[in-house]
Structure formats: C-alpha cells, structure tokens
Length: 215
Image (cartoon, rainbow, N blue to C red; front, side):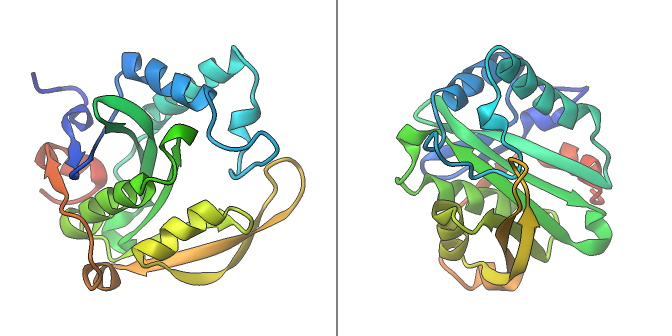
C-alpha cells in the first residue's frame, strides 16, 4: 500500500546486496539495537557528535527522536534523508543524504554508520554509491560533499574508493576537544567516469517535490 501522507516510505534504493529505505518505527527499534551493539572501538569517537556515548535508556529515546526530527523538520529546500541499510533481510546500518537549496546549489552531503559485524565487507562503498546514484542520476545534483575526522581511516577510505577528492580541512569538537577533519568533494562527472554498481531506484517520482526537484 502506498504511503499517501509520507511517500518517502515507498522509496527504495537497491544494489546487488543491499536495500536502502526509510525505517518504520518498528524498524527503528531494530536499527537502534544494531547501533547499541557497537559501531566503533569504545576508545574512539569517529563522529562529530558523540551520540554513541549516550547511556541507555536515553540512547534509545534520542535515537528515535533524531529520526522523527528529520521528518518533522523536512522542507524541500532543507532536508536530510536517513535511510536504513538492509542486507539479507536485516538492518546493518544507516546511510543519510541531505541538501539545502538543491535546485540552486546542486550539492548534497552524506554521512553513514555500519554495525561492527558488517564492516570491512564493502557495504560502506555500496551504500554510498546507492545514494550518489539517486542524487546524480535522478535529483540533478552536480556535487557531493562529505568529511571525516583525520583519524577516521575507514570513512576516509570509503570516500577515496568511491572517487572523492580531498577538499581542504575543517574542525569539529565532538567531545569538547577540537579535532581536524578532512573534507572531500566528488562531482557527478567524476562519479560517472568510475566503475560503480547498478542501483535501482523505486518510488522516487512521488517524492520529487519533497526533494525540491520538479517532477
């Protein structure tokens, strides 16, 4: 049954191994458990906001509120789509893509996480390619940007493998201490010139207005 109120629930991005979709509340609970089981070494902090350090049960509440908040604040000129990544029928992580004034700036940003058991298997690259395919092939984006803390080799490795180029340094303070970040940039032309997996995009037509893109 189509979701008349929020057609983004019908959006699907599919690769050979993965399906990316907006999680329902029941699926949010499953995704939350994956995050609680661990994303990174306890002594590390790879994120700009240290959300993985929040104790239970506050962790569970804030995890749900984050996803609900993205829906509540959604505007065609300012949006962030946090997709659940599914492999072999179970959630393994999250891939988000967002933009401000996409129709004018033609630029998207991305972020992601994977549960530790699912890292090192190429899923990070595959799910990044999935959202880039949607952005470049269907939403008219011309540039994708992302960043990673300098010691987050895994995230930087995914970006470089997908074809991003280094684009200067930034700074974040995830735990009250300033840390440098490496910024990355990828153009649609650069992405198309490199090998990438086939991505099937379903249910997008009814969502185009929500992305600020003419149908």
